[in-house]
Length: 146
Image (cartoon, rainbow, N blue to C red):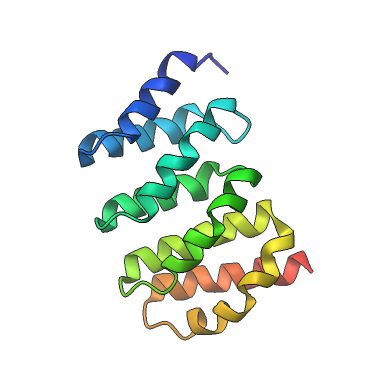
């Protein structure tokens, strides 16, 4: 493809912003301009960790979406515990995004699958259809990885 180095650092600056519209554009640019092989991606891990612990559900959702789309194996391993905590959220939107991010984590780090088996039963009993659909996809991935 075309070189995208011109916009990579700008995306990182936007993600570090405290304003939601700037952060949202930063995450969108990040997912469009970078892939899991890009070296600059390692710089975003700390911002992702901060955003996963944010009070705003939409910022947490953007971080989970980015991790689920372009998370590298190292990034997935570093942020797996944060994502696992979000599975217990009272917000179905966050739980759904967390399950989908776990799917990426299980694909990138197959050795971590067994860490999430116990959590799967509660996800399969969730009242939200989005969480349930994600949990079924996660269950299928876990079965195929064994």
